[in-house]
Length: 198
Image (cartoon, rainbow, N blue to C red; front, side, top):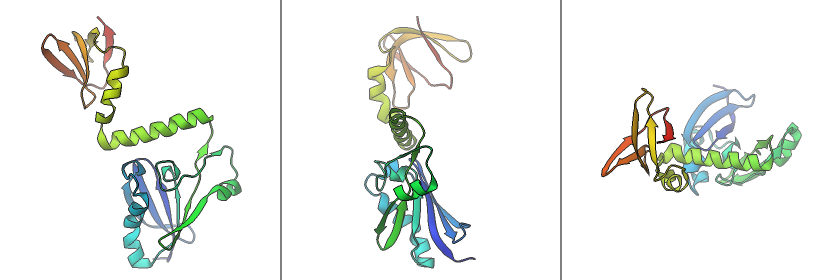
């Protein structure tokens, strides 16, 4: 096997993909792990645990990382660059530091939209990571405060053409719509549901 020279990493909200590379950039080995959204304040520790096998086998190599690892929920925050961005500008904006005797470089993210859209996209990525790890439960309370049909009588049109009437009692922790008919409660969870007022 060619000699390893560096570690490259794509570290997003929900997944970590690490690549042990030779000096030409050829991938020699890979490691996968959890995204930054589930690591709280242990992003650096998660990295060291992910590469410890490579460290034992080959010694410590520099690492170049990109993705949400450079966001506010990542290891170190790196400011976004506006597109178009030249390679030398990306290199200049890359954050370089040492951790446990290893050179680390985190490349900046690139934004091709306005700042508001970039913030919305970052928030969406964070929430998608939360959903991937915990499901709908963390969002249920806010959903019930905001959705337009809470407490309203509705007719629920099901994908098979059937319909059910009831009063919207909210959503449960799985995201299923809960309809009330007097004391009875029924859950409805399907890929395509059309909800219309009765």
